[in-house]
Length: 173
Image 1 (spheres, rainbow, N blue to C red):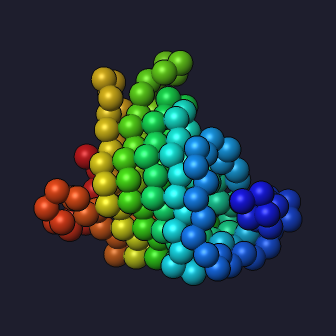
Image 2: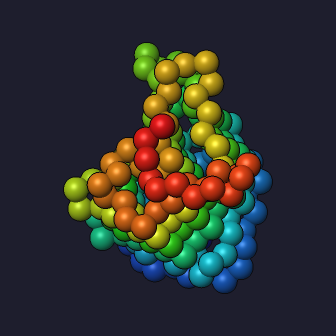
């Protein structure tokens, strides 16, 4: 995974194509990227405690596509999402399956959590993505968003309720 990040670091950019599934085990080291990650339909699996997302930020011009992420995440560090916390680029055909729980922790305010990306800039986009799983507010006033809080930046995205496989359009909960 270090190669993945070195290939996509903010100052270097780059393109990376996954050729197999990756199991990160316990993962607590998200980074910013300024490159293009094509997951090739493969899955990255991990679990995390006190986490902000698989990727912190995608910078303008960067993208993630054709990626599946399976994870159970607990966070008390502000924004957290299954794929990326803040998106200034493009997220396309990505799928997150799992559970995200937001706890207030040391913050004065409760965190925002989302299935795909919490924040999407005016130039960022999310399309054809799916979140299958649950968002938990813990005991605090955590804001939860099935895909993103910037729903006008998401197209053809759905949340799948794992209990009954019901499909829902991207929405705030």
